[in-house]
Image 1: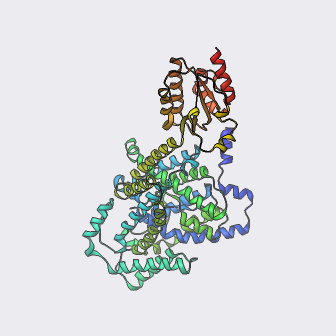
Image 2 (image 1 turned 135 degrees about the horizontal axis):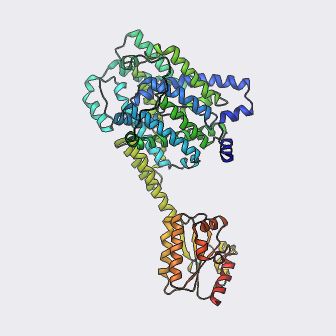
Image 3 (image 1 turned 180 degrees about the horizontal axis):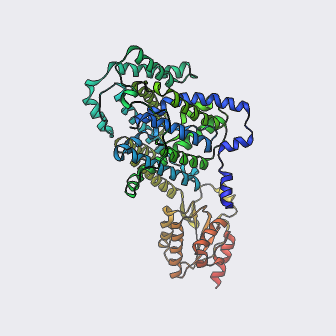
Length: 562
């Protein structure tokens, strides 16, 4: 109980912390202004992302309202704005195509549970270590897929069902060129130019809301024959749906589990990346584990209210900060204003042309493309370039789930290779010293010690992981004849894993069989505790595990005399 209380104290939401610090009237009005601004920005984006994902526009609004409120209320960041994002477009579209919308709801619900568990097990700091080439590769791949998926609405093509795969989309477009609508094309191009113009000349005016308003007015005024939200999806409900559990079965859980895992990983990566960006803009520090728990609860609630997956939205979070937000109340108010818009303006929202929403998503895709990051990464080591290109290609041509899994696996293998190159085992008597002055400054340098005949001294440098473990066993093969005492210096071993411990145990057994006594030197207290827990100390004898080379050499003298 005390452990739970301690956890809740450390991982309490930022909203509660801000309230304890004192919430002033000035802060409320600052949050109110920011909330209205972000709601205006979020309205077209929430619907555009839902439509691009193969869902209905209202499902994007449900997500922005329910998940957006909970992410701000329960999260670990002062300024995080949550809701549907471009990162999910690809995976949502694929899940709906494979398992239907019910499958997406179940996958979102499961992903929410996974995110809560990640936060409870304090994996927030670990998620941040997803390699940069992996995140850049799948983000750029998502951007390309979003752009290609919007070609249909940018040119107003008459396509009944758009294939899920990248090549299938391009093939379908090439077969539908004769259905291009001039009106939709002009509307989309003008929309893109308007967004870019607003960004450059009037940055305080949100370009997306300008595009959807002017687009809807143009369609009504000139009676343009283009598709609107109403013509494709019908009316938007003016109320939130009644919450209900997703339809599930063990068979369905097994089928959507890989997709749920991908959604959870993407939500974790995007939300923590957004929180880091917010910290950089404001100087505050977020709580990563609290943020993951909030993201999990928000996705569970989104599934209950017939929404789609949600995460932290970098662009909306930046808008929130630039609009003067002080606390998470701004994000909560943004969700409240979106609810008011849905309740009272639903009949007007459906008049928005799909070409206008497509224009917004084309700009979003360009912003996500990571062109500069890719150029920079191309100068990195070839192994990182390989991870980047592989993740990008798999995202575009195969599947985002496969891309993330293979990308992380490749990066992990490369990490293991680099760790094994950094860590090494060396025979100290045979070392060559390039920097004499540096080694003379080390009072524990082996050259300053008297090593008796019949004693071999080897040193392990770096983490003793499975990538280095097999090298320890090979050291005995190098020796021409067995030695009475073998000292293993471990002063530069910060950590050891199970494979390293097992290798140490096997090494000891080989030495024991040939009559060699093993002595460990420079074992740190934390490392010694791990060896005790593994049972190795009892096996080798506590008197043969010493914290300094001098005591290890004294022990070697005792063993030789015995």
